Length: 372
Image (tube, rainbow, N blue to C red; front, side, top):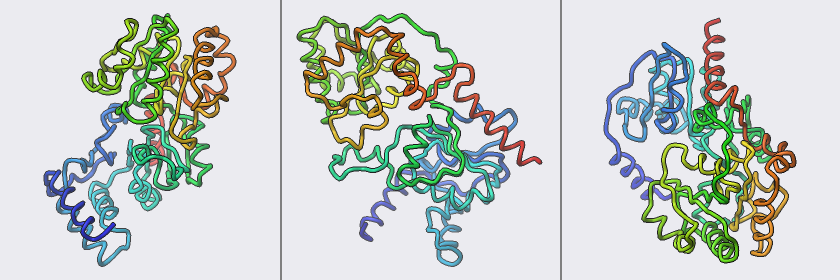
């Protein structure tokens, strides 16, 4: 990045934020981001004090000056890393938590500070390594920039740990807890009867190449098959979805379902087969015993973990039609029996001890050990 680009980026960063002078002293927990902190804070324990670094909205001016001074005179870690270190030193917590597991700055902070303060990283989505040069720019955000470092990773499943290790990540301690984003849904989960044949899991953008191909295949399938289809929106973008899915919405038995809390998971649970591209939901619903048909017409490096299913994720139409027929027809119990080891490998589904219960225990153990 050129000097001019760096300056422009810095000015943009400053212009988008308000200013605060300082941070409080003496909190038990510091959350490094607002992102995802709302789903973690209720489970850190009663009476536990905390502070959230709102760096997406606020600049803590005193610590900017301190980080500049430290970077120039005392440390070669860089201003951004020193900025967080200065804030953390002032707050003086016993535990650091982030729900942003794909930020290289957090990996560096974890590596530099976890010897003195416990650091927990909670996985927030499916991330991949080993990116191909053929992956279009619009999909590169799914890949980590480099092998990460985690002193304590709370991940979805054994797959994530193995995938990271394969590409050189350093994970000192790993806990497979599942996804905190659906912990409430898992806690109240009950198996339901199927009402629809197919659930399509929409993406944030459905006009990208990988999604367009799926829509084309499904439109062709609907021409020759009498099946009911529900499209589960990821965002409240009904008008955009009407445009993206217009090839399907001309069929009487296809409709869009507007997003509400856990609406996509609910629709998947009451559908015989869930189809999607690059969605973490496919892992989660599969672990609950539901039939899935993940598809990826972009690049083989984007196939994990669904390449474990043993069939092509970028099939010719005839193969797609044949496999979807198979999924709609196979007995659900037989499907679970054939796939149960993969189901438990690529996601963690546990109604007795859902993710928030595991998270709460891990945090409690940190405080118990620090009190000794």
